Image 1: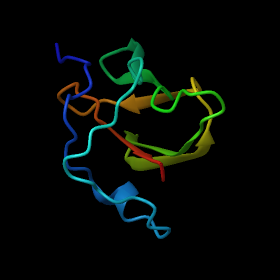
Image 2: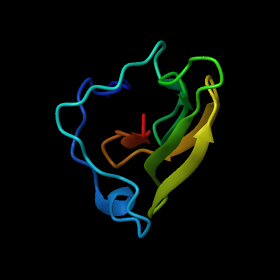
Image 3: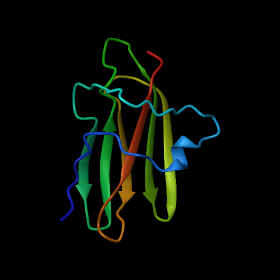
Image 4: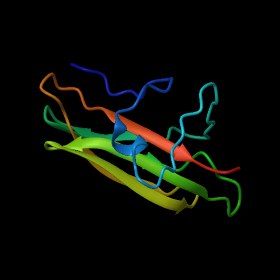
Amino acid sequence: SPGVVPSALPTSAPTVCEDREDSRLQLVHGKTCEFVANPVVVVSRTGRSVTFTVNQTWQVEKDDVLEYIFTQFSKGDQETCDLQEQVPPYTELTYTVDCDISGVAEVNLFIADEA
């Protein structure tokens, strides 16, 4: 059975989020984003889908918001790129992603902050 563990290193992402017309995303090589708790948590899974949460645990100082969280995944035959702006600490976002024919669910997570 496939594992449901986020990759330790960034992977190359499909273009659905990167090619957005607003051009808010820019891949920065060699930069590490630190967090205080696991930002991706699997809530449930079946052979067809995985429900997970994205938790804003990167910027957690008092009143410190993260400018953008982009979550990219497949739902049916459609790629989705959800944008959340000005995300307060410990905000929890819930998504369900479809598995491919081999039972693997892939999610790309982008965060952006001017700080």
